[in-house]
Length: 293
Image 1: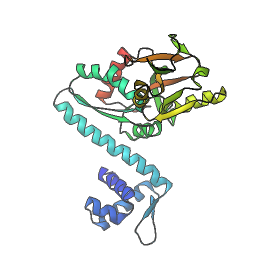
Image 2 (image 1 turned 30 degrees about the vertical axis):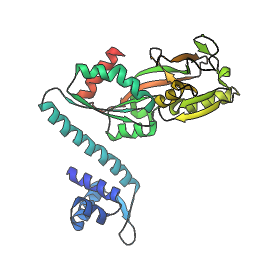
Image 3 (image 1 turned 90 degrees about the vertical axis):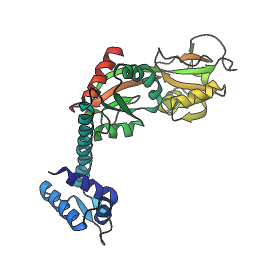
Image 4 (image 1 turned 180 degrees about the horizontal axis):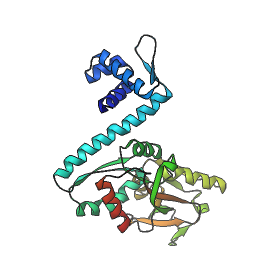
């Protein structure tokens, strides 16, 4: 099957009608309609319904399947073309990774920066997105590696190559009026009357554990990124609640206290799509990561 048929089918779906797609991709409408007929004959079923007037379409269940698969096929071809061009210039290419927003800063500092020094001709596409979007990007072939702080959707379709627990910690400004002692730990109860700034990635877990413990936290802000939650603490406005590995370093004006509760941890995972061959660049990074994790 000519891959242009898949590209044009995607265009029809995303434009909302055959006529609109024909204008966008500069193909005569009858020719585009014929391509659709060829696809429907090839797959032996109707792929979309043209609504009365011909100004809009509705995908059938089979059409939805083909739309998603066609996006993957076209994405894979684009990726192959780019990597072949890159390889002609030496060991180079593009590493495409989906990350949970709260994990991107440490991931760059702890892994990507050193990896870049070792492989300076590789460039990067990093997508800092929620779990649902990570899942879709990986399945569509837009990215090859997922770095997540919560389980990916459709987990049976992924292979987890590495996982690590990250405990939730409280970060106080060194001059915070809520900093009562120099102990390295703090009880969940002790956070009840303190203005808290949470990263969104850990907020659901934190609220769930507090509810189970009949604790009612005073949440001042919920932030998309971990860095934003920490910024509140750096300004001595509130206390940040964020996930953090034991080795993570924070600004010198912050005091870290681990929250003493075995329920308060997130699992960081590195995953790929099960059964899908990786590009040379992605495999090189995974080998590097597994040696230096």
